[in-house]
Image 1: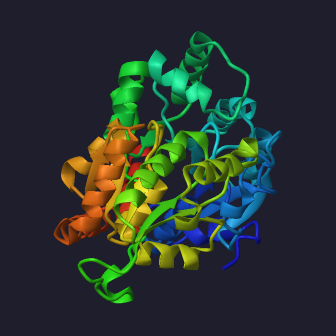
Image 2: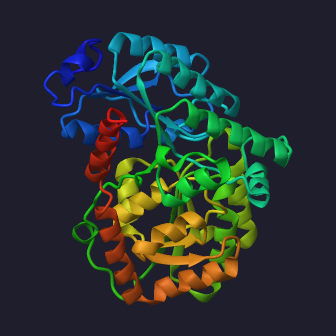
Length: 413
């Protein structure tokens, strides 16, 4: 079946017991592709309303290619009206919008985000059920907002009070004109309730899905002290990721442990132009060039190899705004982690302890944690087992089933 046929979405649902027709609005992200695949395996006809071309503000190297599950529908300036026109033709019963202010699930620069509530209002007039997954939920606390503002893509310093007012207005408006919201962790639901005063009954929690890999079969068991301890950072190269802190910690570690190396895989979005070079220059200033490799953009195949070869991964984020897709990859590979101690990672560690937490911005604490992880093979084995268990509990098939139940619930409300 191909979704280039305008009638394919209707025919795909003719035999489904619920009679669902679902359209997902997003860029061509790995998240949406995996979720759509899981929904189709459950017999649900679904389609991606994707971009004609991805907005130029995004790092195209990390975007997925459009597959048979997708239609090229929108661009960043007209997307509310282009999606409405397509929905009038397809008549889906649910439109599921993936959203964040900037990043993979955005629709262009920050100012373009006003189009999301406009889209939801138009779909409401069409009597389509509207579900929004909020991939980021920013705190309105002044101290956190200042950090977010100072590491945001916009170089102009917006007053904290105006930034907070913009966020409150945006989240409350999206909640008002949607039928339900999905977030990826309880802490983000709590944030929406306490800081944005959105009704609890409107917010559902479904964790980020995990691709499951078999780490033990894909690589031999390493010796207690391997010849080289490979430490991995994977993800976007941006100011909020705490990379200067990671490099400072690694410089401390390298003086104590000679058989270690740090791999950084990822690229910077266009709006952080020049930041990757700044990080490389900082590594040179610290004198760790020979032990640090900047890999840039990597394929999914190479990414799997990196997660298999690494002893552990470090996610030294300065603050939390969203669930971590990189953490999901680590769990899927059973890879131990070292993470910053923030609300999101605390929640993730509460059920399965699959790594160590350190205060953000503390290179000495991070260096000590990395040294402990390298020296304790028993600890790594425990964390690896716990990571695999956590990953299995949130496989994409499990997430797809939970999402399908949300769709069903929309018609019972």
